[in-house]
Length: 266
Image (cartoon, rainbow, N blue to C red):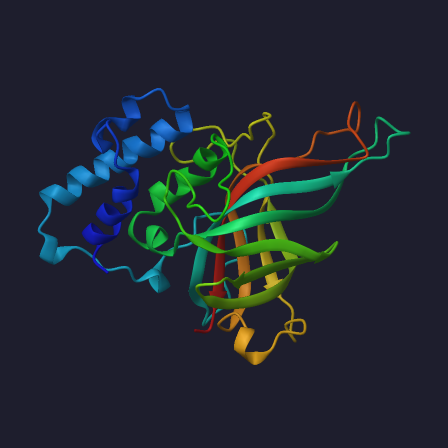
């Protein structure tokens, strides 16, 4: 799929009275306006380019955002890239207001951004903060503003096992179970200088490297996630708990969004 077709076809879903090139001037929240500004610049570049020279969507060569996390293991390449939009979940000891909240997993819907990662990683880096500035999609709708389609779901099988089920009615990318092996503090702002805050002002959760458990749970060979062996959570926005349980209920959720990069052997 050529770059021009990919972006312009996705923009058909955004057709409205305000032209794409001017949407960053509309009264959207700042993260949305920043995204549309980058999109406007990209469209201008597309129109000025020779369509025959445009790159194709080869996300296997997409480059993971730079960080101090350990690099992907030798021989692994990007298999799937998604943005997750959901909640980080916590519990509190209500008898001890100074206690720190305890993480008890996460729930998120995943949206396919593999091609966007390959053709414009800067625009992808703007999506998590932008996605948090509008209500979460419902009933299988695409993720605004990137117009990304459903990839699957992320949840925890137990307190330490992050599960990614990329099996939907329209595709089967597989299922994988993972354990955290490294984490780093997330940047306070994304590359567009937009704060990575949640709707409630929450700080971004850390960036992570996860390792797939072998054997991969009780997954059948048909559902094995393309030989995926490592998963990264990067470009996070929101999701962090307050420092103490003061004023918090026994259980609560904090909205977040993040990029998830799946690395495998195929």
